[in-house]
Every structure is written in structure tokens, then in C-alpha cells.
Image 1: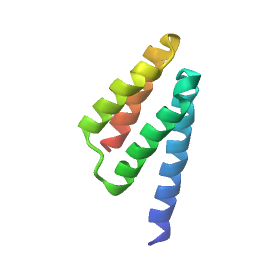
Image 2: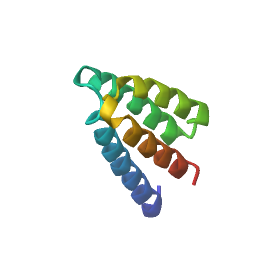
Image 3: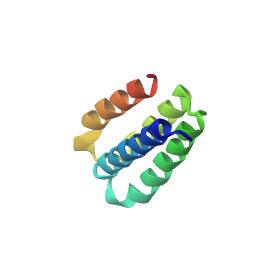
Image 4: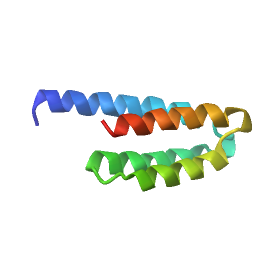
Length: 88
């Protein structure tokens, strides 16, 4: 693997870690592990290139049930931004 590709993967992993922390901080405490597991599965699919818009939609629907009510709109915006970056 060339160093440029390795650097991209490192940056992607760091961004995923930040995104996961952001989401987990906004879900009800009893859903922390479920949110981490769900996002971890999605990140594996992203890495393998098999993540789809349908996956994103399912993840968003599931996470919205876990998010604290006061954070729902903020998380929707963050997920929308994340999804748009995935298309690039």
C-alpha cells in the first residue's frame, strides 16, 4: 500500500472516530453500545466499499430512535453532512 493511500485511510478512521463520539454523546446512555456497534458495522462496509444509501437510511432511522430528543435535529444535520461526504 502506498503512503498516500495509508494517509487517506488514517484520516478516514480519525473522522469516523470523531463522528462516532459525536453520535454516542447524543444518544441515551442505555443505547451507547448499540450505537457504537451499528456505526462500527457501517464503517466496515464503508471501508470495503459496500456501504449503500439504503444502509445510510436504515442507520439514520435506527439512530434517531436512540438520540436524545433535544439532539435529533442536530444529529440529522450531521448525518446528512456525513452522507454527502461519502458520495465524494
